[in-house]
Image (cartoon, rainbow, N blue to C red; front, top):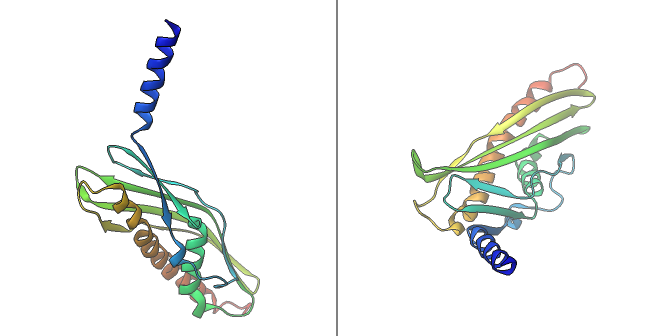
Length: 177
């Protein structure tokens, strides 16, 4: 009797797990080594679950999401660099979601982080977030959501870089420069 119960439990566990899909998402094309060493993004989530789907979908960025975001921000902000400028970001969080009722053909990302800008001793702190959206065919396979991650990350990085650029430029007139 115990063996039958154990076997049934194992079958139910396998059936429950079979709905989980995990995909590696290559982000190497977004990373340029040595870009803006004065800008750092500390580790964020290792995996991103796409919410709102019938099955559980977990995306694993490779290299790490923080590495790709740091490189993208660095490329965008490189023209803003001057001696003794450092930007250090932490508390990176990223989520992806599909709204099956209102927008089944779209996937959205909510990306946020906090950054400290040190401009020759003048320090400012800010919270930055972006919520890009991209098209994904309704009832698309898991691979479509994996392909959407770099698109969403690039859009979020450009949005956040624009606001970091504005904050860096706003402080250039302070007396410490």
